[in-house]
Length: 229
Image 1 (spheres, rainbow, N blue to C red):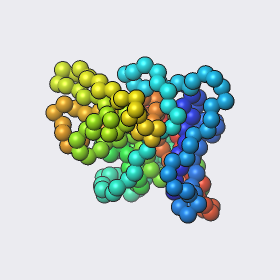
Image 2 (cartoon, rainbow, N blue to C red; image 1 turned 120 degrees about the vertical axis):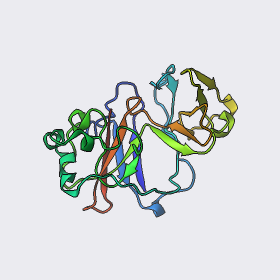
Image 3 (tube, rainbow, N blue to C red; image 1 turned 90 degrees about the vertical axis):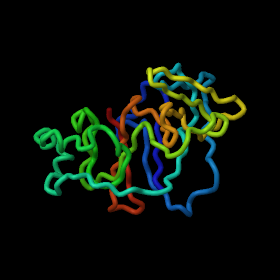
Image 4 (tube, helix red, strand yellow; image 1 turned 180 degrees about the vertical axis):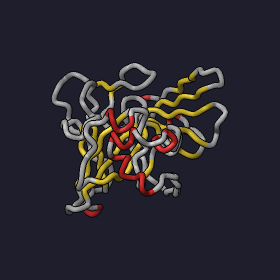
């Protein structure tokens, strides 16, 4: 089971895998208990704030909880001989633009396997890309697309927002009694879409992508993660 942890303190360097503001590790399933693990008690009497796009600061004790129900295979259209260039900033910069960003910043921004789909900053704006023995494992977008109708705030446990054709956004707040620690931070849906909505479950710079690298040569495997915009 892969675990990813990120500090929610404003200004903490969560974009780096080696500055102590995030953690990634793998545990055997049989080592886990049942249910949610309570977050650590806050030693200070001051609340910890994080910034969420389009809103005032809000207090979070943990990130949202989502479960993978299935996978969809996707052809990345990247020739095998180009794969190594995605881990070398100079070689990546020499690739034709259609190969640098084959997804054109659309779906899939969350995926496993293949090569990284870098953000607009490419591999240049990162902390140094983890080198061997680490290999690219997967990436996760700030916003995750969910099939189905947007749930009621009291069901999903967080505020929901509905966008209209004029760009306005209607906020539907969650009742205090229905708030859940393991709910997404927010949920959003376009007004004319009733078969898909997206949830925001972490703060990767408001619109960034997190990347996970793994060293399979150890038992259990080692993992690191970082994010970029």
